Length: 191
Image (cartoon, rainbow, N blue to C red; front, side):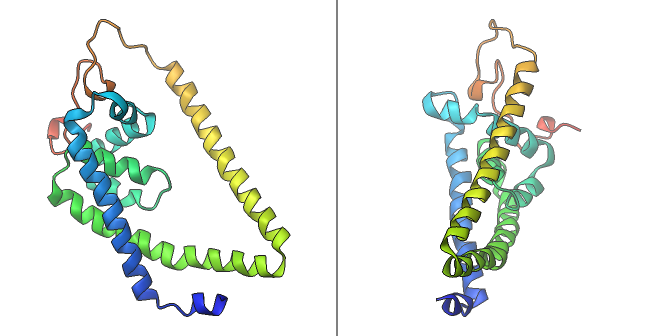
């Protein structure tokens, strides 16, 4: 089985993964773009008001398309960056090159390093299933610990921030008295 996995051609694998990421990330962008007007209602408001999306909106507005391209090299920020690009209505002439370049980097990494990790784990499992399961449990525990620590740190930072006056009427995405900034608006960028 391992020989079969290792014999798969790299170019078609990268191409398939690239197509998958273009559809997934592009769909997330389109979802954000279509949801721009509905960003102050119901479940969508909770998603847009989430700390990761609000942080991503700020970063995308500040640095633009390169953030979208680099987001493909992260875990967890990628979806928020693409959704934020759509919510802020980043123009397609800026978004598409970032999607193509970042998506290609993601596909190349997952087709090479990702596949090598999977093959190594399968080989370990064939030699010693208990050790392979133990390694998987340890990796999951470390990842969950890091996620928990990061969330705790963000919650502490959020508690320290200044409380917004309840007299201000809420706007879209929970930003009191403001609407979502547009990424193509030069005034929305911070120097």
